[in-house]
Length: 141
Length: 469
Image 1 (cartoon, rainbow over the protein chains, first blue to last red):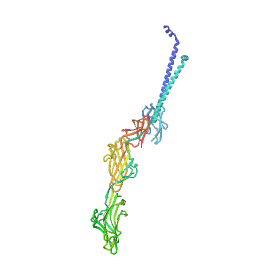
Image 2 (image 1 turned 180 degrees about the vertical axis):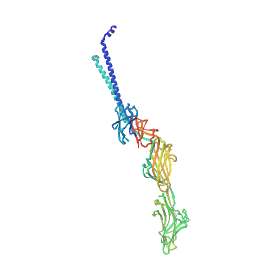
Image 3 (image 1 turned 60 degrees about the vertical axis):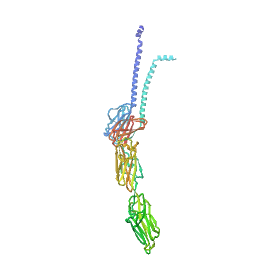
Image 4 (image 1 turned 90 degrees about the vertical axis):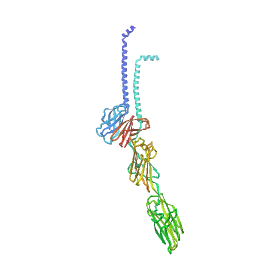
């Protein structure tokens, strides 16, 4: 028995395979973790992009000259409006950031630097951070 | 063989590693793809449901809604004259007109002195003498015996001349006024007797009517024999009512030709007539009867205002307006649902507000009916001119009727009431099953404005719009 222990401690050849196996395990686990994280991120992004739905409940050419749009999030993820275009021209809006959680709704006010003309047709396009567009033509009263 | 393969695998460590890597990679890919596919399926399901959803706003009722008649039934012999049911939609002096019909009669004896009781007042005679001497006038001694009026009559006597036989035509007449329109019936009666001592041939009696326009019509003719005739009472001689279409002064004439049988101043022939009269039965009451019908809604009314604006072509017509009470299954004779007035040729607007059980005045489908009866004691028909009839139930708050025309149940989450100056969003929570019509009442919403747009939004993101301008 004592001879076996003495032989084990004097045999240097076994260290290298163990270390190499351990190293390989660490590398494999790291790689798999990376792959799993990437998978999670990829699928989450895809899911959120695919699950984004919002509608304009109402659009109001309010007396102040601005346009107000009431947005309802009917999708499966929260949305954030990144840009608003009126007749393909980008305008600022309030509140910023405009974020709607699932089922939430609220006014999005578009600040129009120049007054609108009555009876004209306006194409209003709302773009989210994930690239979803909600738009339509509206005639000013 | 198997042992050789196992031995080789055991000896070749690289093969197992490759397989594990490939398997794990496949697992990751499967996870990604499965996520994408499943999520895509879910979102497609959501989009498909959204496309299938079909919600509609059937009606929006707020405050008072007004309804005009959609039908009209003529009562009795009332006749339609002009205009249409659409003319009843507004108070614009454009009428739907109906003609009244006769509903009561009275009897009129226009000849005031037809029995010659005491005198011949009112009667005058002219003569056309071919030969002889004419005498005429009141005869107090002779008259139509019972059942006639007895002693007292009018006579014509033609007395011969020495060289000639008497031949005289007497025209005795009396006048009367008639302004009662075409009568229901007219009968003539009179009695006559021929006496004397000389009777020729060719004597006759013609009872003649002279109309206001001077045209004449013979009502009865009798050829007298060449012999004496005792009192003969002719009654119930039918006279055409068309002879009395004119209003004015008529004359009743007894045209009597008397021809004696022999010359000489002692020879005469005499006709007495008595109890000569006309019995005119004329219409003295005309009536218009109508029943207007219409539709409305079946909401919970808080009050009902019903209005009728109308006039007549005659003054002083007693008009009764009744709204059918479906609870009692009758037209009310007083109180709610009953209005009456005397209306003339100027439009009169009659209106009544019912606040107690206003829903009693409609059926389960919202139908209603209104009865109009107008009566006037008159000889002439009149017209009823209906200008505007309105049935206006009112509700508290606003009533929305949603219809789900899609195959899926819809969840309504918001309601918009917009007008030119205001946008108002209301949170609602209403489930409408497939194929259902649902009435949604909001007491806090008052749609007092005439022009508005109502929108409803579903949980899936669909909108339905109802506009009233």
